Length: 185
Image (cartoon, rainbow, N blue to C red; front, side):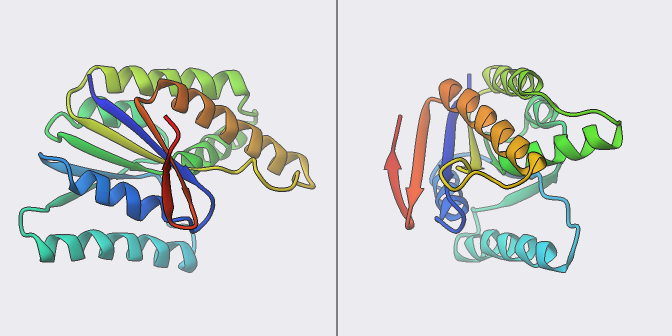
């Protein structure tokens, strides 16, 4: 059974960098699972910066190899299929929820909290089937103002449900505030 770590926090709190450092401190082959679709120039620049950070680690330590897996929807399938890696870093669950909403919209339906909960439980089950460690990054989106439109409120609620289920199933939860990691669980 994999050790499950959930790293959460607000925008630009240092979540991804902290999760990467944690992953690089663990033995074994590493895979970075990217959930972000490169939709525009700004998002492509963000993706490039994340890749460059992993490449810098590889240049510093030639044993620090990262393999990138891009998957926007089927995270349980990736976790089950990535048996050659002892460490998985999945960044991020918030974009995964966004992707689920987008796919559902294309199908003419809405994602409900029960579906997100079911998908998260399936993801946790996939983690239970493997050794090593799985580190998830997510955003804490429910600590600000109430969004002014139904779609944004739905996203906030679905991301919150995802975080709640994943946090309950994680062995360890770390909240980053101002770049400082605080152990929650």
